[in-house]
Length: 88
Image (tube, rainbow, N blue to C red; front, side):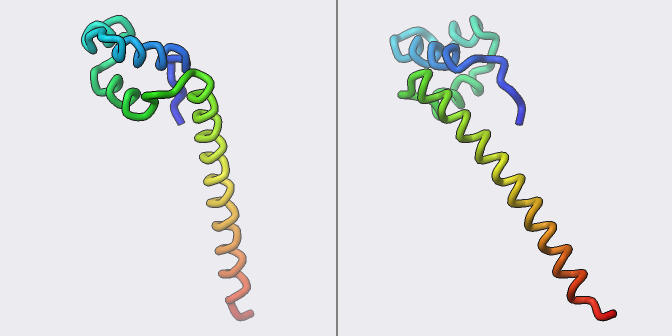
């Protein structure tokens, strides 16, 4: 997973600036991001504070690791079944 170059507090700050009435173009220019990136942030993180956002990122990383572990175990299981099903 690609690491964001923006901290949780920067993302929350950008969203709060928009909610307080600042124009999207100005915010995007200040942070050097596209409008699409800003709207993705807003869709995903609106209404969160920096602690909630940090927890969400930790959970997403844990979920990614667990999915990888499950895929590895499933592959091992399939290989073992294939080996055991062959007649010697």
